[in-house]
Image (cartoon, rainbow, N blue to C red):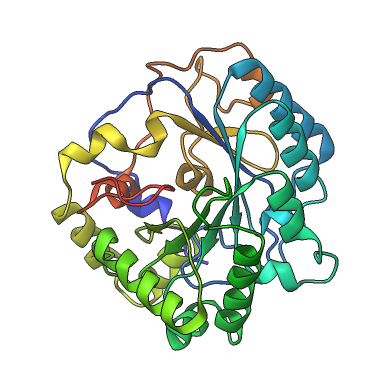
Length: 320
């Protein structure tokens, strides 16, 4: 695995600061039943890092004290963490909206037969990765058979009411480009997804999130191996739009790793760039209970151009 941070350190990305915290994103572990080429986490079946019960309870204590509106749970495959359901049920009891970044194929893994029903019962928003509506592209990026399993997962969610207007069960899909290119316009691509998935499989969903591939971890290492890293960074920088700075996710979100340490975003977490707080080398979520992060400086490097290029990119899709 090639290190990408040394190539991102010298940066002229503009300084930005936080606004009011609205979303807590937690990475509950890097173990996954898939190993996707575009994965910025380098997740996979052999990873063993996972959030323990004590840290999960510390996360819940922060949620209760902070007044955040949304808990965004990611991984790896977050559902593989043994405390995933504790986090979901406890956050919902606190009135917090919960998002599960689901790879869809997890629904067919042993021991997860009731997972879809559990998520529906707790009105968890599903953010499902489906990097293309074509089988060949999905299987090339995520592994043979993933497309068919993903379709079955989406159909199961639809049967439970996900994606149906008025159900209160939100189903969002996530698109990632196949390589070192910017994603197409989100609006037009969403129409293509709706038409193709609806006509062929009867699938409905609420919205499509288009996310730029970030030059970190597995994807960044692949770029270095192919000699495309600098070319991709030039692409991101040349497409930079300053108006996207106002909407980048790090202004209203913090990211927590499996150990409980806090970062400005999930990408900074993968680069081990900790959230700046009171000159500490790194900060644990339990140390932020009662803290006000408003106007706190955000750690930026050259990878931040990935969130501000073209239509912009965040965990909630395009910014523009």
